Length: 469
Image (cartoon, rainbow, N blue to C red; front, side, top):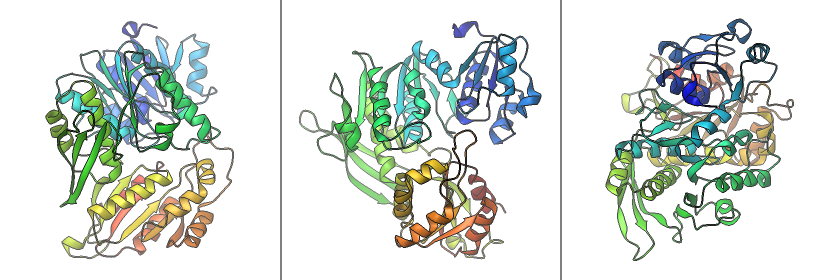
């Protein structure tokens, strides 16, 4: 399929973060884009404002008769009305992953993969290459404040910076020149049987890199370090002194964290210092991965450090939303509770996010509202979730967010999880649905609290509602 020949494209599931990026990319390229989804959302309204018509629900949308192609989200089933309409009209279709694979094959692709941190790292890498004058195309699975269109930038060069999603092995359709992996953990149990199958997928992903290409791995991640088989030595990064690029002398102070970067090859030269406006050791690792990518592509360290120093973070990744207003909780200005929104939905993400909050807000009470995402994930990682929920001072757990078409039925409840967390020493409360959980959260707020609203489902709206005046 020649992408340059496309004139009219219909996107099904256009309200998803990945599909919306594809729609915006095509719009900038001069393609007439239409879309459909099950309901309107913040993202669909953004697309409409850009001149992309979005019809809801699917059954009422209708695929344009002159469409050259239908692109569908992997979350959309075969029996979707729009997909069936396209088939009856002989309109060819491709999944979002297939489309990105075709795009990737025609460009020099930098693909960032990993269980955690890939969105932030992709955004960092894209902005570094933009600052270096590379003029890349960037496609990321989140909104980036520095990008006018949020999750996509369309550049004029051959370079593509692409978030490589392992779900349903989508990243195996990409053609990376450079592949970076942030870490590998067990996840997506509705598709992968376990960690061995996930590791196999990541192995296949790096095998797509040509002999002339580059592989970048986290030296502190045991699976990446020990289980992946490479034909050429990778560039590595981490706190581990054996890595090619090492972060050391980390200092957290006044809402910033800074660290030195040492290149261990040769005489172990310190390249300089990086200061981040975003918290957490995991973000030091994300920044170090982005630094390794930039250096591997010939970007000067000072350009990398300057770009990372200005990096504000991305949507729903330890995103500062605001403060709880006086009408909700009377408190002096310095003591008004801070509200953070985070997309994390894995035990490792909970642990890292709470640790980051304690670093940036020392001495303050951490109150977490957590919405588990999928019954399969919650059940398979149940003990790890229970242990992770010990870390906040108070944890309110809402009902599990079930993803349509990705669940085999309820196998575990959030009430079970709260009870298990309490057996681990947590102060956990079962909150019920999102609205009831929000009320429980409000009833437990105190002046000076740091509130973290966490999960990949619809719980983010609680964070936005909390700060409304």
